[in-house]
Length: 215
Image 1: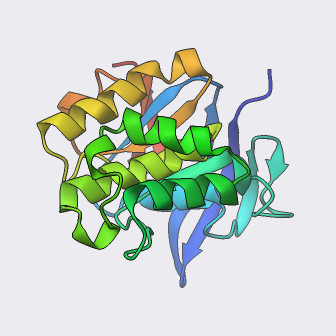
Image 2: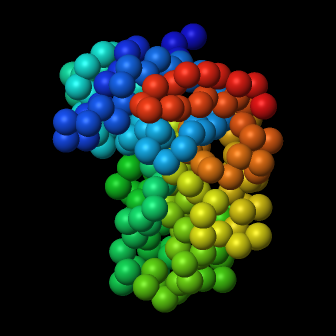
């Protein structure tokens, strides 16, 4: 079976700095892969490369069968990235943001409503993004990703800013991933929590994947 992510000697530059300096990585369908490593190790850059948000400078990169060296936008319909910014519209309600995201990616309104329930924001459905708390905004960002019905979910420090209930919501999504044929890459410093949710761990150091450790 073709891997969801396949990288060979992948190099990505930020300016002249090699943020990724020759990464080899295979990720199979349904895996939850934890990316660990210190600040500046290349975790966020790796996620953004896979998402098609940064260009590949050398090596090979295929995501969902799409060659990122040739075209880094074709696969985006099937990929959802949740980073530090929510990228939601302040003047739209929680439900409106979810339905807009679903419609833009070709998913249905029912997918948006299901995502609203899944992230526990039903009571905030009619509240604008601008009026949500920081934790609620983080939940909404996750909901927007789920409303797109992605095949690959990329999460950058997703537990940050969440209260206990929000963390439980996120953990439930990760635990259900394999059964939903959803592949997840999660970059996190909260190793005690995320190791128990991951199928394996990839350690990044100075822009290279040095080790793969079974939790």
